[in-house]
Length: 273
Image 1 (cartoon, rainbow, N blue to C red):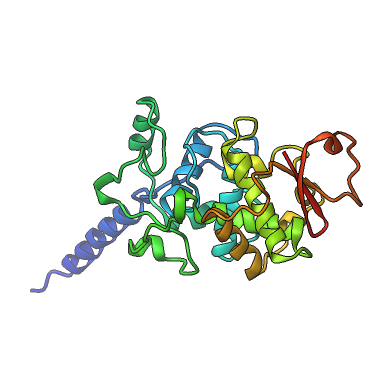
Image 2: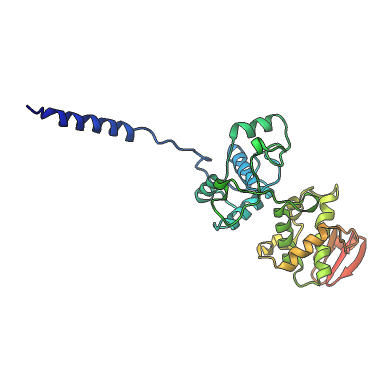
């Protein structure tokens, strides 16, 4: 005689196991908090933001949990390369893309910070030969682990070059080529001067330092000539004569700038010490 209760019992057991499986909490890897991270922010979210941007090669500054201009520019470059809205804000979409494209070992990063390491990439060393490199248009490149470090002469990053190209284009795109190289050289001379910030982003975004930042022309897309001018300056060409200032005498509104010792005039710009 067939036991009709057996199939019913098996069904109940199967249903019970399936229910237990689907009721298990989903295993997720949480990245960041829910807040929008923006310039001026501080804390753990900024540390993670800087570490992920550094992992991908967009940020080469110190991981310190302070959202300064270097972090801002690196984030904008990441957004540009990954086809996101370029607003310099780490909102939900940007954070999701960062989390997918990069890795973040919170314990390791914070350990390096507590040890006083000055970061270039996770404390200046590669953790388990962890790849680092410049982000590209392939949105899954972080998952593939195929990033390759990209650097330029004298340690200037791709972001430094891009930012300088933007500044040169915004400040001097109507000038002769030698004048554009001279503007780039002034930026580098300021980086090397004890009087100014010691990073490219610090120099360019110093308050009231550049007209192109004040009027928004810094965000115009630079042409090839501007980038070539930057590379020539990085490689040692300084047509400015070691100037740390320049101005257009036809539009200058500061009387103080006229007091600076003048070196030469190139195009419409006067270069000074």
